[in-house]
Length: 375
Length: 119
Image (cartoon, rainbow over all chains, first blue to last red; front, side, top):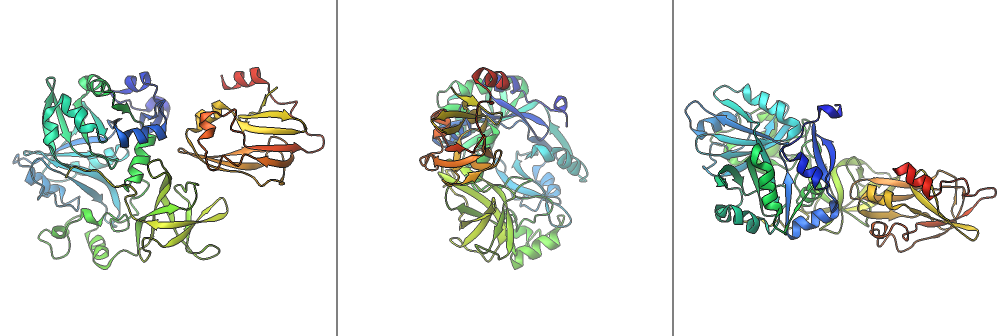
């Protein structure tokens, strides 16, 4: 893709004025970092509050002709193996689009807003997902193209946002609400991608800069780029589409079987009925041969995506590949995730081959940090 | 007088040895440095050989030997405190090298030429 073809979010000029270093990402020109730097931005988010522009993500409204969210939910369940129909109004849930082979097409957030569902999908997969949704009978699909999406994350997020919009303080983790700020309708969820308490806020594009500036006016809030977003989600043990999962990775291998509840599994009330159900449900019942797990390398050298993992310090077998890895600023050392034989347990040692040397790596619990969700 | 390489190293002649570090420009481009691996003292290296590994929060990169020679010392503090490279790149030296016969740093860029390179 040429640079002229890159899309810009409503906050582009604000990023540049804040010193953001703009890079191409999933067809968008996004800030990878600001002058504070990735490490500083990461730590700031965990200690205070970070403001992220996630407007590149796809926002989609899904409606049924009946005007009931539950009817749209039953249709979405034919593409997503989650309990969408059982999602109460005002609540949000995580789910996966699957393919016929049992792989993952994308991951998404699904909110029940009474008379419709509101979905947030990955930027890189948005066109594919919208086409897929448009192919489902019994729903209308409305891509939301006139709104920015911001995330405010960190322990001070609740104080900062509730000073502007008092209702958000009473929301619990994964609650969603349609609220108002200074005459603008904003769509708020108490959720995020950092392991911290916080919110994601959909704002009309025309008011996005003003809203972002109102948040940044609080001394606790710093703008955060994609670099720190990645290290924050990695420490929180959250998978990233295209890295920790893709069309060739099943839900069980991605350690996302938890998103497929009993009601959609064998013997459940709404068993199966989604692409790849036979393979996915059989694997969930028998247990996956390989699954995503956390890794803590010995020493300080990060092991990054693509590094091979072995079961011995010399020779032995190649048992998997790092899917996400880097330095964890809050952990204070390197952290990684890889899809490895499920027979491994927390505390076991495996070896990463880095620049021709085998480095001992300990299998670790995910997440690497203790999340601070307000349940 | 300091000399500079196109790989963004600074070189300082000290008696018959050369001290090598990376420039502030390079450290800014790298971002927060989190890991440094240094060569063994006594190792004979070729010009252009990758002898130091630097990992930042963003990526891994190398420092090459600017000239052929023998490594005579390394900055032992760096592996424990890699962030020193970001704090002050000009004092956070990586290694000392004794040039092989016929090798010198005279041909490298001076400060004005290096500043022109990085714009």
